[in-house]
Length: 309
Length: 309
Image 1 (cartoon, chains in turn brown, yellow):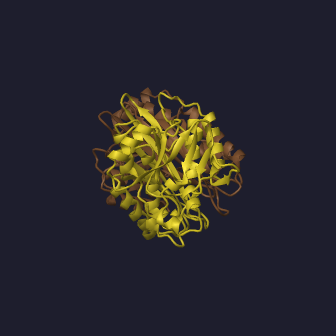
Image 2 (cartoon, rainbow over the protein chains, first blue to last red):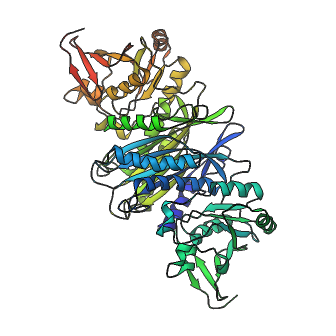
Image 3 (cartoon, each protein chain N blue to C red):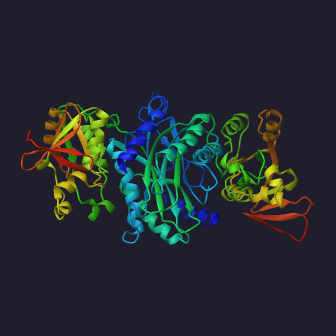
């Protein structure tokens, strides 16, 4: 489904005749940017979360869902190293949903809004005529920090590829209660020059592929350097979970080698950073497996190559 | 359902601790406003439209639905006399929806985007795991024109109550193909001082009640002055249709009596304007019926009073 989304996104991008002086960042990044006069601009992201797809109301509480809907968008603000400003939320309610359940949802929204200083400033409440599931759409605005927003298309051959935190197994627990890397992203952009960044929402292999395709480069990862989460370690194939599982909401970024060295020396945040590989000339992704053999890495999967490199 | 939405909106409004210096307009108007530094600000509105509630894909085309989703939000920009800037669109697709149907939807979005100079700059495509209906969420940004955004809470006793166009019977045709009153709203705000304005999305009686409640005033309408649409005239009770039908997407505004006189002399736009009543001290709405008797007007209905006034 996700490659399908990428195809149609590329098609929309071709169709759109957007003036880059008014919209410096359009379709294809985590947020779009709108210029507002000489010095001001605002960034915007919108995300629809559906019961049965992004959460399951038979096991998750509405407070968890409200929190998740907000932090997923906050993670988009972090993905470009921008400062969250405000959110609007629209909901589609099953018949008979009732005000008390709406207030539970709001409690989760308010928790994230307060924690990340990103207030809810408007919304829309609508109801299905017949029995269909709950859906929630969050649209979030952010503003530039001192840096320019970090895009997906700036990775350069030779760059170090890094991630925050640890990866894999998010669906076991983390996807409902993660911490979007807003602080970390701003600190990163203050400390070094980032060439490309996004948040890992669809899995490391899928999202790194997006950076590679948009930057016109390839990548080689080192499996032994990938930080595997404790939850992923309980699964049958922890490395595969770290490479391919969605909803990690960690930052994936690339930066020049000497910048990476400087970053590793300067970084004093409790959230760890790991270098997991390098950007390479050409295209395609590879991963050096723990046994030393190289495998071709594709979005959501990998194929062992015949010869070690 | 709508009074329910107003109740919960009021509750959200109470809960929110929004800094008015950063967010001069918050929950309760057609758009919220976010300040961005000294001179700049942006306004935002979000709306969820559902198959079976806001349109019916057994009779409407996806192009019509894309157009409607955009012009409904453009109508919110008009409601405050602001200038549309850009839109982001999120969709929830039934399984097997397919790219060609997505492109039909996009054709309708692009039609409205081009016509009203409000490009699509981003979005989100997601799918139901099981068979559930199509939903589309549009979030739109606008900017201030020379005037301050016109709010719902500024109506004053003695104001003239006016509407653009004609009212009622929208569901027969107009709701899928209306013209949002963007040009008219900007022209109105340039010509005179508007005290309160909104677009009529839930019906004249429901929306005028919102202006009255938020402004702490009442209103008296003159049924004979209400412009009844040709479609409403084909219905059993044309006046009731004009008073209560939703989705007219005309402008409803109030302004001082002398400003109204000036407006009527100066107005040279093809879209007609009609004065339909006056704002009164106190609270509640009344309508002078064609037979001269006064009726109490409530959101979505009216009760005949015993004594003429």
